[in-house]
Length: 217
Ligand SMILES: [Zn+2]
Image (cartoon, rainbow, N blue to C red; front, side):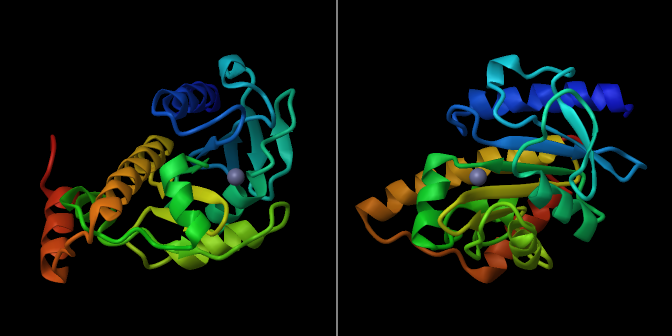
């Protein structure tokens, strides 16, 4: 995908965050790795979702420095860039403060795998990453340390919010949508009683089927 098509795709994907109720005001961001280049496309800082377009997206190098665009990059660019440097298989990163998932992050509590949809998408619990201050590599390090070798494409950064990864930006957006969906359902289940755990072998079988058999091939 060319850089200009990717800018368009990343701008469009930001509208999905709005559509699914994952963001308030200018919070949240989507980025994509530019295939074959040490670059990423990301949302500009502090620009309203209504004003996001291919033209307002910015291109940065993998150290977070602005390469192309008329706006300053998102304040979370360093975290996205760190993930792309450390995880070459990642093609997209999403960050939100979606309310139910972030409520779990505020308690520092992983979301237990008590739904077949969670086993499908996340292959187990959604883990919690460390508390990290914005503006250095701390957030990126916490994301990579938590998700490396983990099936879950989503991490709840403690007291902060959700970061998701995927082979593409669209896959990372899907993980962010599904993370909020299961966070809400498990919250509702827990407020009514004790959710019933799913056996490890059943989680493994569900995950394997969904990742390898489900859908259009
Ligand atoms: Zn944030």
